[in-house]
Length: 153
Image (cartoon, rainbow, N blue to C red; front, side):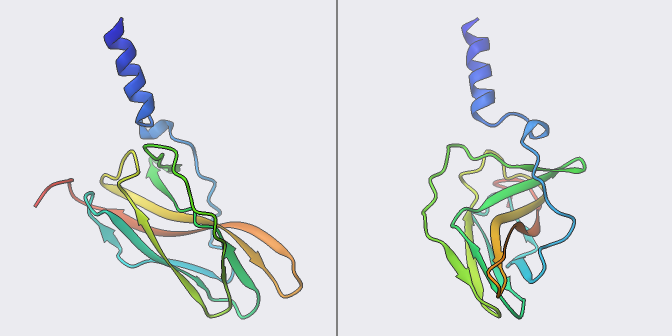
């Protein structure tokens, strides 16, 4: 009985199987005026950081976002949020990106319950504010692949 309970606790603490992770509601297209690109198209499972650039490619308005950075993995035909090992504490700054400006993003992978082979998206919640002050909350993402086995040379 104690062994079974320990196995259940370890299983739930590690986020469970990927097919049970929370679904991420990505739109079919990126928000207008926003580009988000990873510095590399392919990463290895033992890479510690995924780096990307969030860009305001619009001619008017600002993009705002917090410091939160999330990962999603394609499981079957569904994008699922990759849980963190612990509940991460994010710093509270808000970044404002004007037309033609960009913001560098560095996301650590060691906090994730899984970073194995597959198709991934790094994403952020953004607020797009037009010149009239109208705001629209969206999800901006950059796609990449993880190829190989952790620790393989």
